[in-house]
Image (cartoon, rainbow, N blue to C red; front, side, top):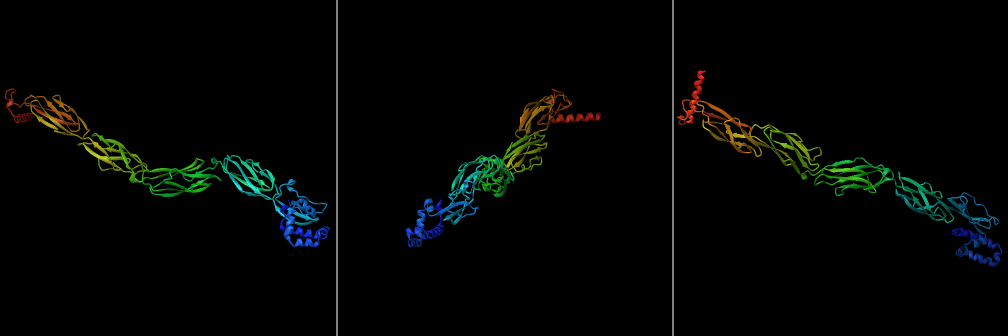
Length: 497
């Protein structure tokens, strides 16, 4: 208790001691000169007081110390009412200020105000959402008593609930299922603050946008993040080789800048995710357009064969996401009816077209997409000859067909006296052979036909001329003579009519 005496106090006490000793029986034993010599040496007096700084030694000299609340008034102590050292905290806690009084011979020698306000270390604490143990230290004069009291039900004082002088308080924080919360532990009226992180599910994380598209070049844009008070977060990129975020972590609301590098290849897609403890609460999806020079295209099918009647058709264009294209055609008999350009944003699609009817020979046209060519072949047939005049005798001839590869055709007779002897069916270029029977009607002729590749081939056969007796002189007449005779016959009959 008495170790708190300062040099100033000791000097004051010593001065009064010397005065008393000089006027007391003690002077008879020590002598005034001896005492005055010691007074001239303050160090000697200080040594005596420090060596004898015990309750017994100082009491024998009539020195008393009293501790009272600072608000109390010091009273003059008498030898009959000496005040012993006592902690007022035992009767009326807590006291944040105490006053120390020193008496000698019933007279007040000195006094000093003592603070009982603790100084915390650390000054406060942050607890994770899951809670857990914690502690803090504080310093106080040894004469100050204290108690530690939690002011909320989720903080429990586990050790150091009370004591005097410097101390340590241990506590435990319960898990938090809600928003950020703040509680205190009070020691002698001084609050030690504990701030506990919220449960992430209550933070309401949200982003100003959830999808964004960048062109092929590099760039950077801001992203607004909204979060509850005390809500810690991490901004995590799915691919930091080209997509980055800054800052990558924080607490509460923030503006995050996200950046992309220039793209030299195909379209790419990444994301910036707001995560807490490995759990994702919000995501921004970022799409960057491809370098168009890296785009490749494939057409399926790559060609088509049409009949003479024409018709509609389509083919698919397969390419990378974000790749742009156009469909081009320079043939007037082919019309693009759909998919002349790539879909919005590029990528795969379908081209539709129409082919006109063909009345001539085979023909070929194209539609170009992304450097690839879709080929359209339309069948057409050339038949030669398309007519023939033959004599009365049985015989035959060849008919030639010209057509594109894959274009099929057939040949059929339309007359009973004409027979297709070869090439009734074919594809592409080919030949049809036909035969006919003899015609012996004197002075007459007949017509017949075959259909080859959709075209009609006419056969005109003459019988023996008039004036010719079959089996006798008909064989002697030339074909030209027979034709002339037939013409004469026709003219004569027309005159008779």
